[in-house]
Image (tube, rainbow, N blue to C red; front, side, top):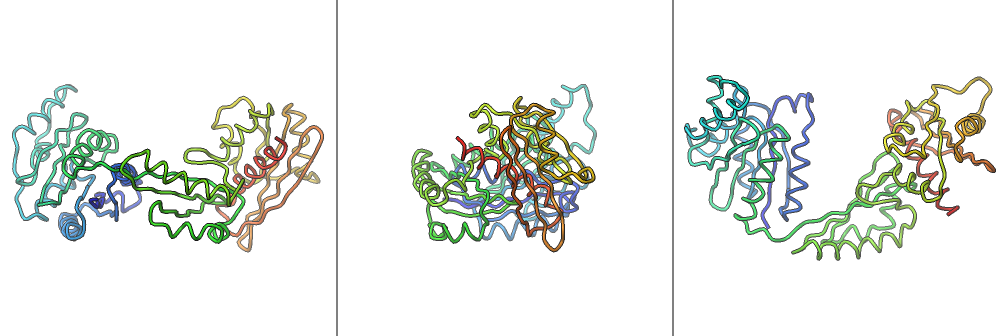
Length: 386
């Protein structure tokens, strides 16, 4: 199985002006091809530093993929840096210049002289035509190893990756297997407690099991390597069944499921509607429920504070009557450096219940955590009365 590393090129990434999404996309797709991604790195628009990191990376990996730095301006140095790393010159390819001219003419434009720089690639490199942009990509081969330079514009990069890069890697390395992942989402149990419950599974070699915590939600990722998707699914399902047996309803969903989508499914199942009152959250809970565009969510109130003398349960009861919803959930958060908390209340036509949860994370994350706490509590209440 070949190994790979991804290098994103651009000073704007290092300065935090844009977020690197290319690495995440490439890592996921390489995983599906059964290619191990060991590292990702970012380097600014400096020819010497790019060449240095390429030389270092060549010593330890089979495949290097770079994104960015292939534009027409002086601060697009990837071509020159790759040539420097491999000890060759850049060479002009008339065919690439013709492709650039043809594309510009389609838009009724005349290419500028500096765009001619894009027709230069390292000597001996294999050019890759770019039908969705003006920056040609290229491949440099060195024995069993290779470097592929792709544009940094995400849509251009993705198109060339799907239509050129991945087919090339399949042919060159005879890739037949796959790496597949499934993510189980949990709520209501801390990462350390989950680790105690499933620690033995985290020592497995295939599938592997790992944890990632997010504001009251903990993800459990199961990753399997196999010769086919069917075999990978079989490996994953065995571990998933064990996890579900041990953790029960702490697991609320998998992969693309969210707490709000699970809650909305439960409301649909039970034929119930929902309204909310949230205080000092910036409307996080309302925003997440409204994003599903489901008629069972009837909106609610987003307040900076409760009216004088009113408690959360009273506000939720009043909102439930006004909206006509069968359920109203109230949420108020208290952000404090010494320890934050969330007060929750759930009101129906015939009952009312309350709960307080403590939070030990950063106060700036308390609204997100509070929304997760409210949704987790609500989905458990709905499941208990199914």
